[in-house]
Length: 129
Image (cartoon, rainbow, N blue to C red; front, side, top):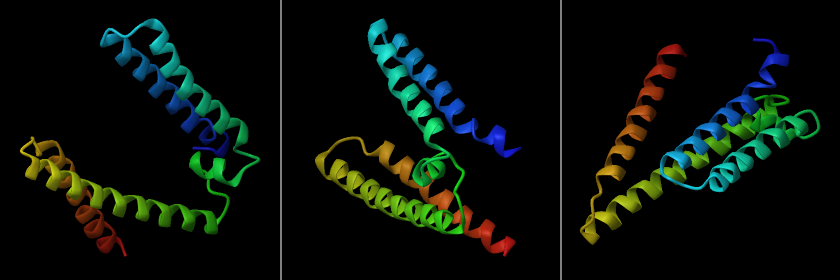
């Protein structure tokens, strides 16, 4: 895929996501205004991202087009931090729900998927290196 086409990939996917969110809002009997606001928020993000891609390193990174190896490294470290925080939050939510007598199944399943994805990634990248 050429860089020119790739510049439109994330904004286009964001607009599709905005349309799906708006449809979900309408499907749950929200007003047309609520669906339009949901679409407008995601569309504004997509448009801002596209307009700033060539002017901002951060917008370029959020678009999936890191400027250089430094920004790619920053992205990998930020993803690692986010995954670690998410793992702690999942365990905490599971324990709070479990001790509170609620249904902790959604947290257990999400944690299981997270763990399988992590272990699968370890195995995959170990085999390829």
